[in-house]
Image 1 (cartoon, helix red, strand yellow):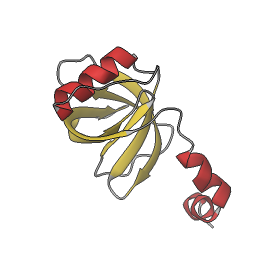
Image 2 (image 1 turned 60 degrees about the vertical axis):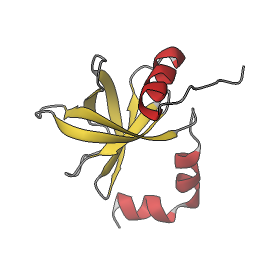
Image 3 (image 1 turned 90 degrees about the vertical axis):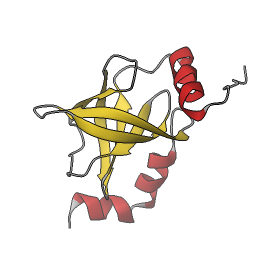
Image 4 (image 1 turned 30 degrees about the horizontal axis):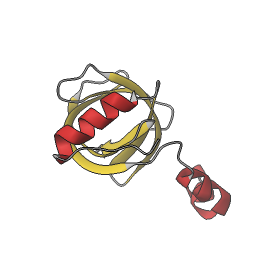
Length: 118
């Protein structure tokens, strides 16, 4: 049986995938995505958190692959692929985004201020 089938039939694995280290915000941001050993291409970020993102990735990308995400106005952010499913890739940033940078991105692309509970 493939690892994919084992992971999808294991309820503990599924629950662990939803145990996120930071809340995700659904958003649409044009970006450039480049995987190790490949050329960058235009993509769209579909959700963003302090710890990672989900973006469009037409070709299958294997977990553990290193990638770089470039958002408009920012330097490339290094991340690691955690999962790929149906043309979407989920990645964890090598270093957490600064909450200030994260909130500025959301404010710019959602058009409304972001307020944090302290």
